[in-house]
Length: 435
Image 1: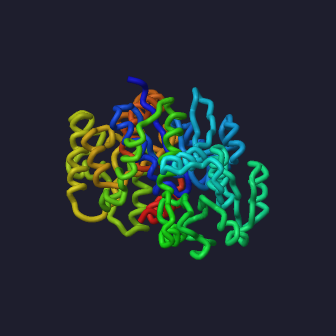
Image 2 (image 1 turned 120 degrees about the vertical axis):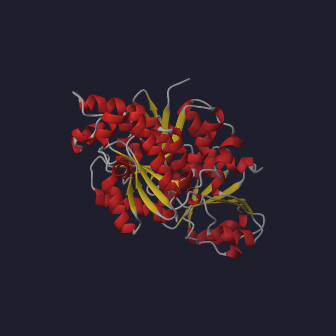
Image 3 (image 1 turned 90 degrees about the horizontal axis):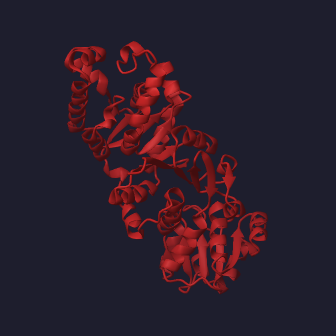
């Protein structure tokens, strides 16, 4: 079997992303040794830094990082350069390559819905990254495209790059009279199009995951509507190929969109990660800010056993301690109500524990390099690192545990520059957005 591969999607926010479901469902069905998670970051630069540090194989990129990420990779594909955005980053033996698969996602979604693009008159609403990718996807398949944008200079700039037409939004009433396909790439809460401008002949492609105000109007006019979720799926298939040089099954990827539903997990939040990554400190901050009880599995074991963790390891052995972890986690899961759970550094290595966490908790992986964590911890209280060369042992131990943290996690938060206040605020912001 090939070596374990870690992949992710990054953006700000990112917890809402459905990409992990598509990829992980495929890995699960094919027994491929890989896991796909989310990477929360404040900037493209931070995302790439964690990407390199964790040794990711590949990463999808969503808003607002698609443009900035171009400056962070080693080489950008010519199509991504033309579109002006990268949504797929691939690690090839340490060198990072940037690609854009959004254009393929647009074209394939329409073609898959039975729409021929050759010579079709298309209007793309919006000249941002999604709009430009859509325009190129349509043009590449023989369509005639006009890019319409509120700021006409931005539409003109994009149109000149692609050698197509442009207009302002004020021209839409006339322009749409002779249009076959409308691609809507604005946010779901923005709608410059009035119902009377639409006809049942119009084919509507809405880039939004969730139904926008524009889509609702288009439905009332009996237009054919292609959902943004199709775009997500059809851009992911070539991205998968870039990552792993393998084409996934369409239906398996599609089925993954309805799995791994974070809202169905229950009301517990679990923090996992290597010792010294900040789980207890951040957990207590979250507990205070969210008014949710905090529990620490290590502290619960110490209280139950009446011994310190070094004493448990010395007198009973690591296997005994791991069994205590499993029993304590089961107790926590069986306790009704909301809880913030700080999990011991080895909690996720156990298959039963990972299953419990994934089924009942939103699982946050707090990540910092072994170099950073070793500096933070009291080595005497950590029996596994209380050795002659703790850093060497920490690196080895982290590498062994990394696949298990990845498999258990729903999202990674970087704690390298440790600031529990800002990290907890970011976690709360991500959680509030999906609720």
